Image (cartoon, rainbow, N blue to C red):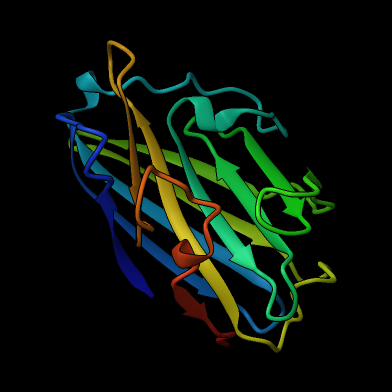
Length: 181
C-alpha cells in the first residue's frame, strides 16, 4: 500500500517537499515499511548513523513511525525508526495509557541517503505479538517527525485528527492492512 503523508497545518516545514510511505505485511506477521522523504538534505537535521539499538524518545527528532491497532480491544503498538537506525517499540493498553516496551525482535532498519532526501526501509516481525493476530486486519497509522536545521519540528501523517498533532488518536489509525503472500 502506498500513502502520501501530509504535513500538519500547524507545523511549517520548508525542507521537505514530499513523504511517501509504502507498507505491506506478510501472512506470517512481518510488517515492512519504506518511507521516501523528498527534501533538501542540507536543511534536515538527521541523527548520525549508529549501532541499531532500542532507544527511547526518538520522536523528539527526525523519525518515521507506525502505529498498529489491535483488531479487538483498545490496545495498540507504536514503532519509531530513526535515520540513525535506532528504533523503539511500545505497547499501549488504550489511548496513551499503560505504555510498556513491546516485546519484539530487533527490526531491520536501513537508511539510504539520496541527493533529494533519504529512504528508510524497515522490516519488523510482529508474528508473535499477542494483540496482533496474523490473520486479522490491522488498523494502522503512518507518521513522521521531521526536524530541520535550526530545530523546527514538523509532523506528518496519512491522516491527522482535528486539533494539535496527535499520532495516538484513534482517527489516525485510518488504514487497513491485510496479510499478503
